[in-house]
Length: 140
Image (cartoon, rainbow, N blue to C red; front, side):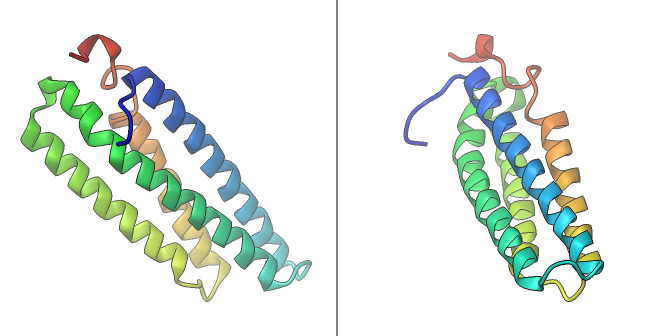
């Protein structure tokens, strides 16, 4: 991470990124509906999926650089546990990125990928990205 940030600032930035990703996922789903109804060409949906993938890649890079140092500051989690959590989390990021890079043969597969991404973001917000975990009073 290029510069240190407080947990509360990190939490705010990640929340903003999650909101932006959800907006992009909504747009992809709207375009998938339009494609299924024959109102648009596949290229429009593929372009929006590429935009989602780019935004997700940037978010994941930011999160991966930030998450471990911030979680380690909350030393009640323990270094081994944090390392394992970040490793598992990074693996999930790679799998989702791969799914968005592979052109889905059907909009149903894209919808399933988006549903998985939504569940992932919800899980992050429940387990990692909360004021219970990312607390400024724990920073040393």
